[in-house]
Image (tube, rainbow, N blue to C red; front, side, top):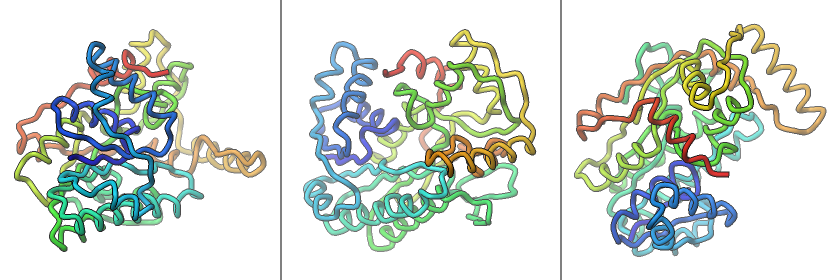
Length: 333
């Protein structure tokens, strides 16, 4: 039996689809029943003929990574655990909530896995949990460096990784994947796919920042292969391609037949914008769409090295064009 947390998310749903390629019993944790419909649609998109049957192969259980008793009950009898559940936010007010769910939730999974004798845990971390501030190219050996500029999300994921390594010290077999910005079929109102919604509505502005992007199908395959392998107690960057944000925006705009963003935003303007948005959010009691952290990250030029996993598993990632094409064709409404 395999247990998956975060099964209704962008990556979790792709992982479940991959896992249903055979008849291995699956149990997946969910919190919001309404999100199950989106996973069903995803399965039908990737496999029109057998998608419904594959979806029904999963035993869905309602719960929370903070509910230790139910976690213990659900994980009992499971030999493999994939922990995908997490909160991603760049709102300052969400820091303690992220620490609770991302760090404490991971600690709960680790503790249950150890006590129940789980054979292997695959934990989904993030490139945000890898330091390397000031380094030109970041790899798995880059040391964590926390500064006043480090985002709350980064701290929460780094802290969660420490819980996994603590579990390793206590005898748990684990592997960690560190994906970058994930692109895949799904709902454009959620996660990183909001980029597609923004471009589709007409994006005029861009920054000169850069990041790495990866296809959700690639991460799902790598997670399964790592878990089935003899590799334990290591982490792997999962990076498809490094690109300027402008390159991603242009690729999406071209495929949607929209105008490309043409106005470059300078750092001073972004700084002014997030401050104004902060004031507006205080008055309206609504979350700011641009925060200090998101404004700063829009100008960061970060490059990651995925050669470790490419070589260890002889794996080739999908191109940015393939990622974008699939995300557009597989849009879930």
